[in-house]
Image 1: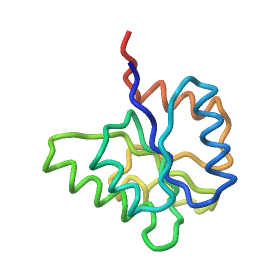
Image 2: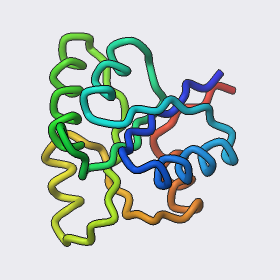
Image 3: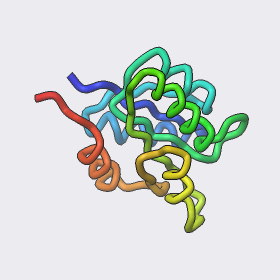
Length: 126
């Protein structure tokens, strides 16, 4: 059994695209529409991976990732977090890594790029 992937995205269209792509790849998803909801979801349930939009109101993805990492230290766990952004700043990847994320994916992303990250980070039970 494969754990679901948490999609943290405040934009309805981007969220729908991510969910459809993940379902096409065989994954169930859970949705969080901001950083606060992402933190609560992680505290309630385990995920195979988190796709985290970095530019969200209230609490952005960088802050949410940092708080998730702080909580995970108390639990002895680590869920791969992939930062996602359509904003094409050259330092996005580095900023994601500094916030405790494992990787970065530029939006709009292709299914092959998403599949590659899943292959790298998600452990699939056989």
